[in-house]
Image: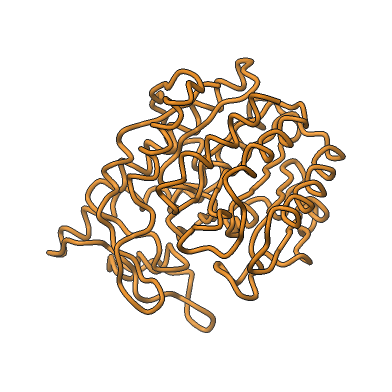
Length: 343
């Protein structure tokens, strides 16, 4: 299996975030990607390739142009305002406020284009976002060219980013970008299988009214877990998209037996949909030691996940999402990939 990776991710570093009432160092940090890369190397998974450079046209197929154009301006505007540290929003245009006028102020713009305070910017953030996007598209091209699978070692992740908003460590929705790219390259149907602990709210929002991209999310119950306001089982799509969005919310403490039963049901729906390509939003924050998650999967479970996905016998692109137990993230993420390869 070929992996695509960019060292530019490391510019998105030393960020701060709002968590449990405190401003704390970000859980989404460069060590995540570096440890996964080291595990890819030690397991001899396959070659690690640099990304090709892409323009932003593919991003603008799933995000609004205004939002994508905003992202590179954040740090220059923040710096011009005389500030350093992390650029974090503190106000949002919620219900009863106007959300149709983009303000001139950078603080207000950050709130306008986000749904939480979990997507901070530092000087190197835009370059990391762009490199993550390039990684995803380069890996997608490998699958389009005939590879059975490829691994996009993306950082920052993407599945919480919607058509016009960032949040949850996510800025450009890489899984959505490559799903649309596969459609544009001739795939009739694409399935996105999101196995991250947190609901992929951005991916759902982008494709909720479409039938050509099926979205399946296995995640913690939004009644008690972030992102809270999307991810319920009754959200099945709207209009042409009705019946093509599937959510599997699960309670705190979910272990592999219950989680794998949800995966089995999702795989059944995926097979019935008969996609040309599967895009896996690969989060391993389902792990029992993850510091911000509440599921109980163990390291030996992750190769089983990969094997089940391999049994679909479809071209598959893995796109890295969450996972914050840094010591074990390489073992768990690469465990899925070796399980896929060994099937």
